Length: 176
Ligand SMILES: N[C@@H](CCC(=O)N[C@@H](CS)C(=O)NCC(=O)O)C(=O)O
Image (cartoon, rainbow, N blue to C red; front, side):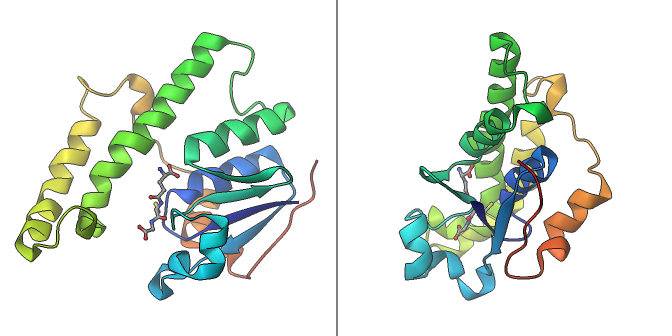
């Protein structure tokens, strides 16, 4: 069975939503960032990058959100999560997911994870202040295509984001 390692309020939510939407049978394993679970030896054996998400499959571990999303979409084609039979449309989906992953997420990380780039406390504060502008610019009409417009998530996904539906250490769903 698939195992998704996630932490609430993180980008792992995208893969979590995809698994739910796919009707996948999976176990969700919650990490607590307050305890630095992502840096503990047991988790580093799963993802040496010390990040979530990580998806354990019967062929090994997958990391990086765009990779997980396409893997889930291809593994559960009946859910029609991506336009798998249309190379151009699929490339547009990949472009969107890659943009979120490599540009928007990195800009956003300057708010909470400034120590990745500097140890200078003043520089960290300065980076935090810049985030509304830098993330905002990621969604400026000149930068983002119409498909990057923000949409309100259904309440189910808000609950997933907060970890409410996955408060137990693991849960499973019926599915293929
Ligand atoms: N490029 C990765 C980013 C993964 C990532 O940075 N995840 C964050 C949560 S959104 C994380 O695990 N941070 C833990 C840390 O920085 O210690 C992806 O797209 O999955």
